Amino acid sequence: MQLAGYLKAQLSGEARYFSFLPSPLQSITLNGLDDTFYFLMAQTRHQIGVLDVLSSRIPNMDLFISMYVRKEALLSSQIEGTQATLDDILDPQAERNRNLNVAEVINYIKAVHFALDRLGKLPLCIRLLRETHGILLAGNRGGEKAPGEFRRTQNWIGPGGSTIKTASFVPPAPEDLAPALDDLERFINDDIPLTAEFAVDPLIKAALIHYQFETIHPFLDGNGRMGRLLIILYLCEKKLLSKPALYLSCFLKQNQAEYYNRLSEVRRRGSYEQWIRFFIRGIKDTTEDAIGAIEQMTALREWNTGRIASLGRSAKTARKLYAYIERNPIIEIGKTAEDLGLSFNTAAKAVNHLTALNILRPTADAKRNRCFAYEDYLAILRKDTE
Image (cartoon, rainbow, N blue to C red; front, side, top):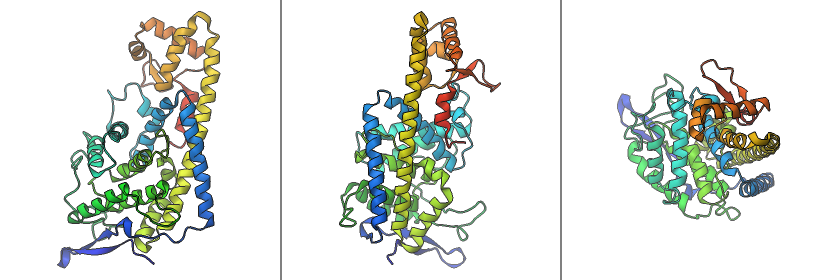
């Protein structure tokens, strides 16, 4: 059995505790990947290929990605305990009236866009992660916990009320962060063989990179969200997908207990293979979910654009409004009119046309003033978020 790291004694006497120092990923070997795993990999690769084809052919793919980034932001934050819904995030007044829960998700959306844009200028490196972390925590809960800076104090993971001695897991001590992060950065950017079969396979490397980052836990707050974002950044940099259409938080939220247990099992027993199998299964399930959502959204769009064409002279403004509600599926008439450069009455008439077609429906939320929702579209996005 190979060791995934070792416990390192810290301090002395009554204050003594043990932190976990992970082995460099360059040193591990993978021996337990059998025919069942190879079949899973083949299925996953096929599904990724299907998703990539859809990503390159669908005219409104950027719109889908924009919506899925919001869903990913919500789910990733929910894993950390954030109490918000998709409707909260899509509320037309979300930026103006945001509470701390909504603000965390909005910051995650900003961090995703920042990181993907920055990836075109920098390699996937520790500097990029620090900059992105600064965006993620700016002005929110955790804003006092050194946004954009690696921790200088010891942290630990455990249930509420746990101490460093009763914690489920104690990551590396601050003085051990730099070498551990240097090793991780080299592993991310070097094509280092792990086994003859999977020398540089980006899916397997993504699994190991995520595990190692979560084990190092280099920030005082936001490590989980950053670790999940790191997955998509790595797969984008390796061009496994032409567009960033693959997000894993839904699978990890649905299997949260198993997720944490499998990470712990690597640290306890060095069993990287069981973690990799779980991760690849998550990629496969997530890819199938994305394909299904794209197909549903595409069919819905084709159906609705056909019905809007039947409006005759009113169709032009209705099409303009329809394009807007695909980007903003919950709208308020006044803001919509302003965004589209229309008078209030013109926007209201277009809303009435789409309401008559049952594309838009008045919201039941009394807090919203004259708000309408694209419910069929939201039903696709809401899946697994509530």
